[in-house]
Amino acid sequence: MEALPKKHELVINCMYTGLLQPVNVAKVLIQVGYEPLPPTYRGPSLIFFSGGFYYPNIFKYMQYLKDKEGTYLVLYRGLTPRLCATAVTNVVRSEVLGRIPVRDTKCPPEQIVFEVGRQCTATAAAVLASHPFLVITNRMIVSIIGSEDRYTTVMGAIAAILSDQGVLGFYAGIIPHLLCEVSGRAMEVLVEELYEKCDVIEKLGLPFGTKSALPVSSLHSFMSYPLQLTTTIMTVSNCGMAVSQLPAMQGTSTGMLSCLKALWRTASMKRGSNLMFMRKASPQTWHTPPPPPEIEELPSGVKAVKED
Picture (tube, rainbow, N blue to C red):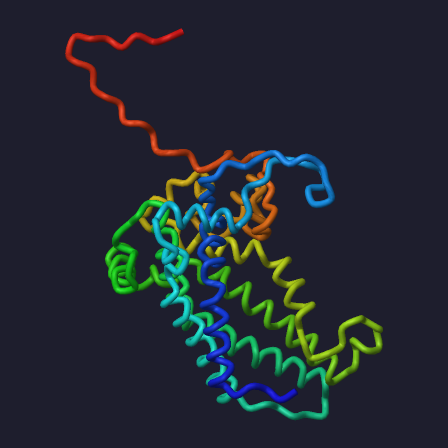
């Protein structure tokens, strides 16, 4: 099967991104620990094997967001910068690959190492170029929690980030993002090159031997999900928004390692990975607590009496 032209591939990727934006909005909010709907108990069954408390699925979550904001447009918050990130990623990767020539040597191991390095370089360049758009996207999405007006538009989000954190604010969470994307691309290219140059996959008798790296991508996505979760959390931490006050965000603002440790301590390493049947970990709070009620001031000379 011939590869799609670059323009067609870019259009397809942008359409795919736009269609999945409602899912992305809900997933980002779940990843940062925004759970306004309390979990319900489900007994043991074929789906809920051991039983326990499970949060509502993503469709109920999206319905809640629509009811909260009064419009389905809330599910497309941050779509513009996310489309920009998709376009920049495709263009930069293609340009870098075009500038690094393919090395054709008689030594397969050397050629494999070079191709892996070539693809990883292009992926790293694409991540560095598109990461600011990821930061803008995530902060526009989490502004739903506290209804921050500063992040309702792209230009407003850019101005807010520059004002609060400067240029470095656009690269919050860049390290786990780079580690996640580059390691995934390295695994995919390595499997493809081993299959094409050395026939290792065929000799081992593994069930997948095509150029499609779907099994490898799925395996890497499962293994590297903590890095994906850490990236999302770090892009919105220390930004002066209501999301920083969520219980799930406490202890995650000092760096990548501290974020991973906090997620490990609270059994939240896979938070948001299952959007249909997400089980509540025992250390987690039941749901995002509502704001404290306003306390009316008592008239002077009147003392409050504590009820037994």
